[in-house]
Image (cartoon, rainbow, N blue to C red; front, side, top):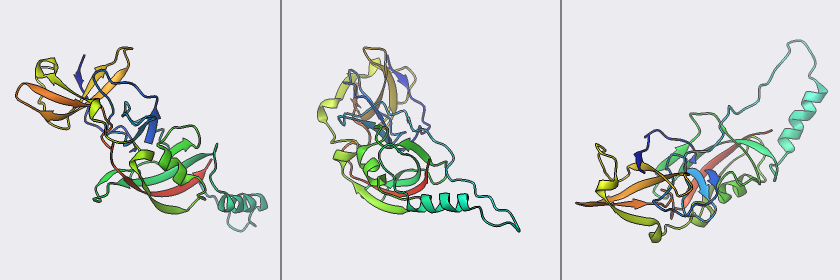
Length: 221
């Protein structure tokens, strides 16, 4: 059963949360979480599964008092620390396509929080964060194989327009919600509109794209 999907962005980007793959019966993902990931690159139900929380740690100062050796030691440890598997981190990022189009950014929102090694984000992004220290920034290119995979023609399906909800203005880019055989929600995107049929695409909207990210490691938790 199909229903119109809300137009608000879910992510991350985000564009980066990862789900177990679902073979589309009617189709899948949402541009909303540019960072929603499927293990096999088939496009996942990207409803933006990034856990977002305010980044940055509070720094306190006491006028007229000597600095705390313990706090100084902690600050020095943070500077020397490097993100590794198992660490929970907070990062700010912005993501663009090869032509410079920005598809997601956390700069005007809270930092993205996730744990390295738990498969919560696309592999290339996680690999880029490993080894970074708090306050460090870097720019990376992530090939599609390490992001949302190649675009797969077999994940598109042409259906009769009569199966779509009444009163919906069907146009390319429209996202629709469907139910899979196990009653799991699937997100479909209209890729082409014909006289009596429409083509639905189960690929992630960023499938087949090499992605470019500017990343700042805000904090190790």
